[in-house]
Image (cartoon, rainbow, N blue to C red):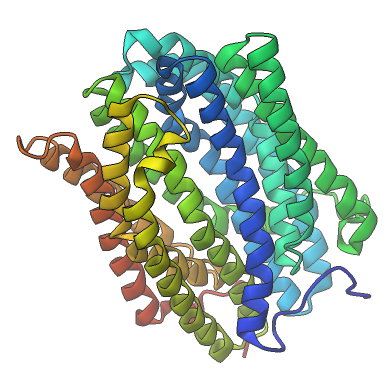
Length: 451
């Protein structure tokens, strides 16, 4: 087959492949975070701080509902990458075809559950009555768009598995522009508040999803499927769940631990909730280089594992670690010198700005630990060792729950224990991920078996 518009990472310089793949992913992820940042800025500046707290109260709960479809999308991408690296074009096509049943089935189920259960979950998290009404509106509207999120994530994951990290970027830029324009129209002109912000995001996500589908069908031969290939294949569906569900469960457990932490945050009132929401948005931006590098390493490791090239996988891990160290060191002076200015982009309240600036400085000390979650975990996932994702998720749950309950109960720490919890969770989880990599079990986990 003519492999135009795809990239074979099993040959050539590992560093060059990783960097070339990471940069478009980074830009794409930053534009994706622009959704959340614009939402927060528009709500915080033009609606109210209570509305911003309402949006923030939904963050971990929304992540819980999004995690299943996103985990399955990653798992499908890993399978496609391994078959592509092995040169098995038939199974690449079959996996793409059966992803429809896996992703859409999961997305529709999760959407219904989220819409029905969101009031109970928000009350379980002790969301204040002053903001719970807006929180329910925002969360239900967001859950209605999970199908579009699953579709985009699935197609984008498969394009990236084939070595194309640029195309998803273009459609994210388009959807980001749409999101910004609609945010301003729905909130400033029509006065729809948090509902308008959520609706703008759904429309933008739908745009990126359909754009990706149209592009993939016309430009990538693997996506031109026959009726025979579109028949359900139990083996491929089973493999998709085998690889994807542990990642989804990891994300779900992390989301649950974040919900517990959000519940702790909510007990300190609206000011701390607003600061926590802002810091969450900022940390999402900080994590983008780590996440982008991790996605690159997943594709790189998946293709090379499929081709049976263990040494190239090891080189990818080493070079990824160096990249994380350099970026983490660069972020420290930025956090310490410009904390107030960064938080001030989102809110005007001096108390929220003061709390947020100190929180950034606390967490920046553990950025390297955060990066060392993504590097080994992404390599392990690409190699098919997704079973570790469950262990990884349990580690984060234990750390986030135990540290938050203990540290915030210490009188001289109080709500500062929230951000100490985040930093310590990153550091300890990173250590567990590195240990797993060096144990070497990932060498035997490939879907593609070699003699």
